[in-house]
Image (tube, rainbow, N blue to C red; front, side, top):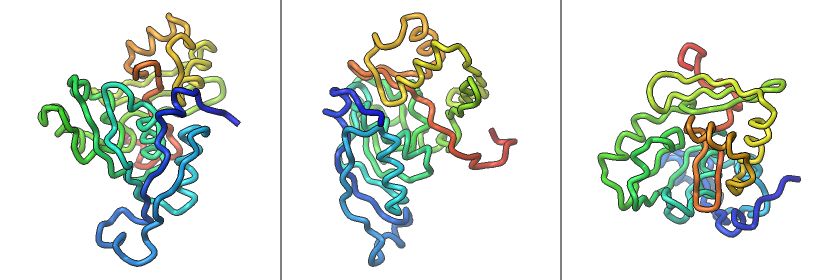
Length: 217
C-alpha cells in the first residue's frame, strides 16, 4: 500500500465532519449526520476520500482553515480528491500573500471564505468553479490533462516516462528534489504543480467519470 511522507502525515487532516446530504434542510434530519470521522494520516488522500464516500458522505466539513500560501498542502490534496469524487466540501481558507489571485486552485470545490485576502481576488472562485475545470485521466502509457482554469481549454497529453513517474510521485505530494529539475520546470510552467513549503503536489483532479456531456469538456 502506498504511504505518505512524514511531513505530509504531520500536517494531514485527521478528523472531518460528514453528512449524507449537502442540502441544509435535509442534513438537519435525523440520521443524516455521520458524525466526526477519523482519517488515516498514513494513507493517500484518495484512500481517505474513498473511505468517506463508502461511509455515505456527500458533504464533508474540514475542521480548520486551510492555509493556501504554505502549509495547507495535505488538506488541499484531500480537497482535490473529494472534489474529484463529487462531494461538496464546507471549508474556509487563509491567504496572507495574495496567492489565491493566481486562480490555480479554482478547480477545487470553493471555500466559504478566504480570510486575509482581498475579496476581489477570490469572489470569482464559486462562479468559475466547474467539476471538470482541471482534470486528468490515465490511458495506456499516457496521461491526458484538460485544463480550463485560465480560459480556453488547454489539452495536454503526457507520455514521456520521466513525466509519468513524476506525476505518480506528486499525486500525494513529494519533496521538490524527488522530481528531476527539467520535468519539474515544465510542469510548473504549465501550472500543473504547486509548491507548498517542502511539498510539491499535482494540481489536476482525477476524472473518475464524465460528469457532463462531452461538448462541455
